[in-house]
Image (cartoon, rainbow, N blue to C red; front, side, top):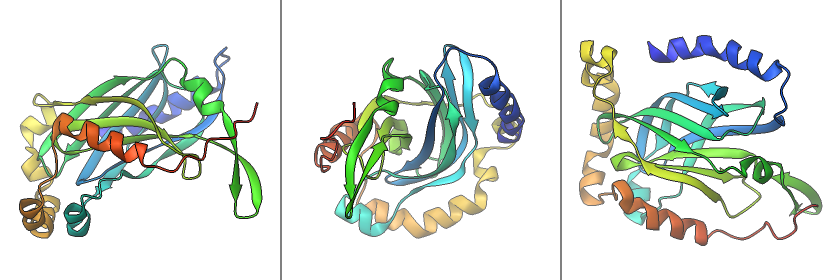
Amino acid sequence: MRWILLLLLLPLVAACQAAPTDLKQLDWRHMVGSNADELWVTEVLFYRQGKLVDASTNGSAGFVGPKALKAKDYRWRIGKGRRDIHPAPDKVEVEWISFHDKKRYRISLALPAELERMIAQPYRIKVRDEWREVRRDNIGLGMATGGYVEAFLTNAKVKPDILLARGIAKEVTDDPYDQRYPLSSQFKNAWARFDKDYTDAYKQYPPPSGMAWAPIMDAYRAAQPKTDTVPVN
């Protein structure tokens, strides 16, 4: 399957990173998740100047719960992913299956040209009684109902998160494997468990969909505490 083939690409990615290059090598990670859905992430591909610089398959990810739906607690819950040393990307492609929508989605997002500088910028943050230099070194990928996607730069200690890109993914309907084995058969047990656990909650507290998420997530970021007040030159 596609994610198995992608694993074979990882040594090639490592080889590309080890090759002589004039691109700055940075220590950064990426993580994937959701705020009102469960996902199966089939692939995440990061590019810089047309070259693949990082790739991963993350499998099961995301978050949903009746209490969170009722409270409209739509913060991104991200986890899984990869950490390595590689150039900052200028494009990301992500593909996933939404358990809520029962669809395979795919999107390509252009990332800011200044992302390298943004990742490299340290801030002086007080952690308990100790001052530390901390970077926003995590590219988060959040996927929500209706194909909504955000790429954002984050760190648990450096706030607020910075939105890098957003968009609406297209449904993938021409996947050869899906044509032989429909998603309903590939995820039969997982979807049955998901529907049993959450259908009633979704009916009572339906989440937004598509671009209706944009102002909600903007408000979520605006409400985050501001800790990036002491940049290190």
